[in-house]
Image 1 (cartoon, rainbow, N blue to C red):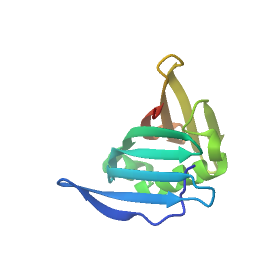
Image 2: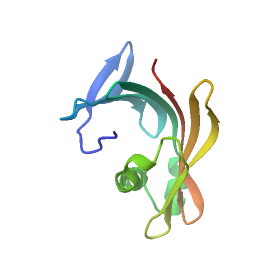
Image 3: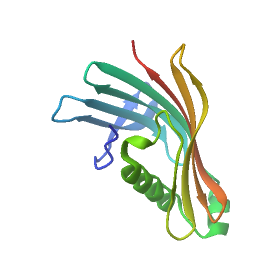
Image 4: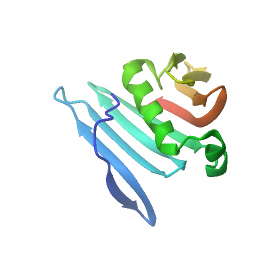
Amino acid sequence: MVMLGLKPEKILRSEFGGKVNDYINSQGGHYLDEWFANDNGGGQELIKEGDEQFTRLYGGGVISTEELQKLGITTKEIIFRLRTSIIELKEKTRLYQPVSLKLPDGWNYKYTILKKSEEVPLTIGYESIEYNGREVFAHCHILSPVK
């Protein structure tokens, strides 16, 4: 349950300024995302669906401002492509299976599984966006049920 239409609120955790989305859907599911990043950083999502709870930690970001300028793109454009990909792929991304999406104008989204343990249980994923064949955004994800 990733809710992208929400307007983030500012938060302060200790001395760290960040943003938060907190959403409860009509079926009682709960999604909380707190992140501490501008171009780079990370955060944590907490998700409740029925009787199951999950946490997903993530970190990473975009290439340097100088490199973005050389390519003629902005962080805002990259985040737009990220949001577009997540909305289009819905529950297929950032979870347990690899997925990719070819976007218009030379943009591509990809999520791969680096490691998956059924015993622990734990999934480590790598999310990236390429522009004209060059990686311009990357996030690593650690996904685990909360038990």
